[in-house]
Image (tube, one colour):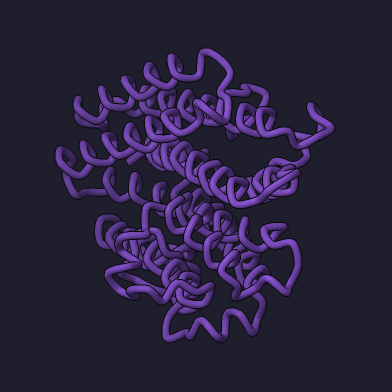
Length: 313
């Protein structure tokens, strides 16, 4: 496969996953802000920090008003990571690689783009936020379903899945990092009912509350939830699961092309970091520091994948 085509597939699914995860990040921040009385600007600031776009945001705004943050992340074209920007880039990449996609996948992406353009034609408020976020999640799920249901399991499929899991690993770490920033008024609240309520909101933001309940029952603690979202390979948005899938897809590409790439060695090292670990060790290292390292390592791995498969060569 041409590197340009591989890159188009990879980035198409990165952008689609980014749309969903931006929606999930906003949902986490919004739900957490509802648990606080008074000024909630700290929560919205943490969302911008976690999204990694503080520099761009500061160029336009001097405060962290909920409306400013919501619309900057959803519909501002000056933000290249906004949902409107990301779905437009996903559609552009889909057009570039259209001959590599089933007609159902192309149609799902095109309909996604049209629906989100309509939904974001006007500013979004806190009152209208929930249905917009639901639309983004549902549209992403439709594209994912058509990929699974209509595409051959070949190199095309593997590049699509690599894009999905690279982006998801990055964003799961970022959503968890929302908890670390200014979520609690002081350290004295850690382990309290307030702390647990906010951790439950993190679970809801990644649609994992039912799955968590099946496995852990009423043991809703920071430790058990962090273990679930970082180390549990049964959870499809956990860091351990995402990195295992990245490695798996790179191994499939090794078989397809008959050559092992440096990115595969790097993926093995990333996967090993989550294997046979206890969540207590993560907290001893420092949750924020652990997540920062995970975000950094995922970015380096993504760059190596682009280099190995000559996306721009």
